[in-house]
Length: 429
Image 1 (cartoon, rainbow, N blue to C red):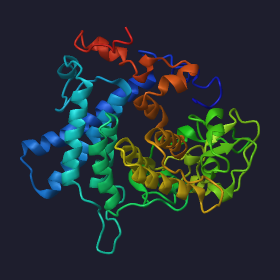
Image 2: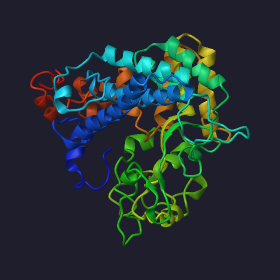
Image 3: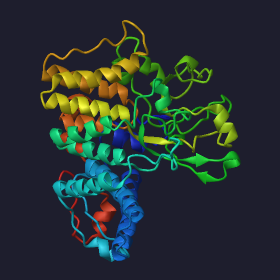
Image 4: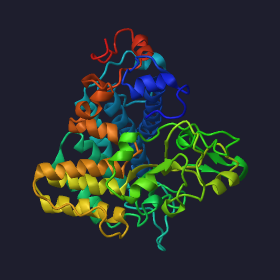
């Protein structure tokens, strides 16, 4: 849910918690515009390399990185808005883009496919030195391109090609699950063995040098200075429905959710603090929970600007592989990939998270869907999974969701600026 106090960002709650989308709200407007800013910067790199006819390996790698960024931005756009403009050249002035109409969803995905195939071909498998350490921690790899491409294919139910890419990532030997689930999100686990792509952030002592982001600050516990818990804006908080969803004694519950009035549970990724009982929400996102020592060192007591936002991790590869295998009728493989996730989650405890034995496709599909919910809780996957599965109306309907809510309306100011060239999403006349 939106989180924070009831009064803080109440307009956001109407839009996102109650599915009353707005055609002109700064949150969706800026999301749309910033994606195209990413696309334009990528297009500048691609255009420059092409105009200079740069074909050396280093330049091809740079172009592949730019194409990955462009593909990622378009993947977010097509999931959020459906039909959008396909811009493949640098935009020098507003008139150049205002006359552009929308492209079909199929055309947008075709560009995503082409960009990521290029990335698969021209990005290295890793950036390691002879000693095995990365020269460029967090820099893009072919595994990142294959993983994002597989996800884009799965959104179109292209199970076979997606499975081939996922198996390639699995068989590359470059990634494995963290033994400790919390390390997949902690400061100590940044750029770890489970990370396939994460956004790098840094904030040095005293705040300088400074390459920071708002992602974690926006989700820190929303208390007061007097309580010692003014750690962020308190947005994106777990619902009671999620809290109730976990299987009995699933350790991931205590590693994902902070409970007001309770210890942060240092045995499960906490730091030995007890949350006040009078916070504005009962539950908070523990996956982006800042270490107080780190906050002090960075002079960032009311946030966590140096948090590395995980975008693609190996657990997603395994659960996508399980889903593809199941849809392709390969039940044994689906069972094995699912068990890898559950085995890590149970942390060696007997009688917890029993192994799921394949019986039929429908039964395994149910368990894979459930596992994705708890494994990626609070990571922004749930809504898009429900939509692509066709389950959104059943699950979210009681909250106000309607079929048109699978997409956001295009920002009305952008539509108006086009002089009729850009048509509003037809579900939002």
